[in-house]
Amino acid sequence: MRKQRSSNIELLRIIAMFLIILHHTIVHGVLDKQTFDFFALSYFSKHVLTVFIMQSMIILGKMGVAIFIIITGYFMVYSTAKLVKLIKVWLPIFFYSVVLFLFCVAIGQQPFSIEDSIKSAFPVVSNNGRL
Image (tube, rainbow, N blue to C red; front, side, top):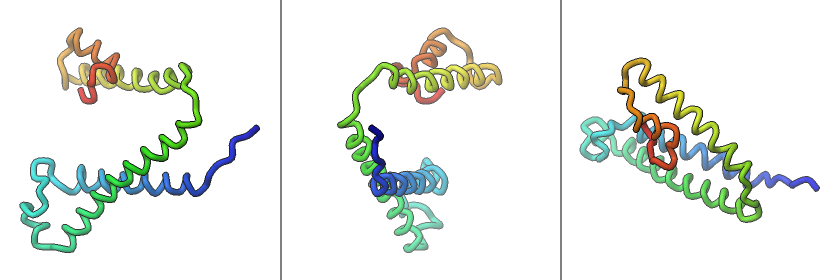
């Protein structure tokens, strides 16, 4: 028996992803990380409409995350946990974490240490999201 795709939920997931991308574009692209207060920004505080649009995109992005999590939970209710699924997720994370660590060591961005190499091998467990 083949699973039937739900187009409306897939469309909502695509819209949620788009909203999340807009959020990241504003927060990590347009705004300076040190000055996140919109009204403290000299340029943007003069343009009320621009500030309103940016704040709206940030709020919509947070809503997109909530929608995406709800959709994921909806589909996970009927799925079963399998070790194969966990390994398929963990292997790319492990590979890219180790490769990025070795690359940063090779270019001199980070000094090599045994502790950091172990953390790079287990980024999820060690909460090592950044090098």
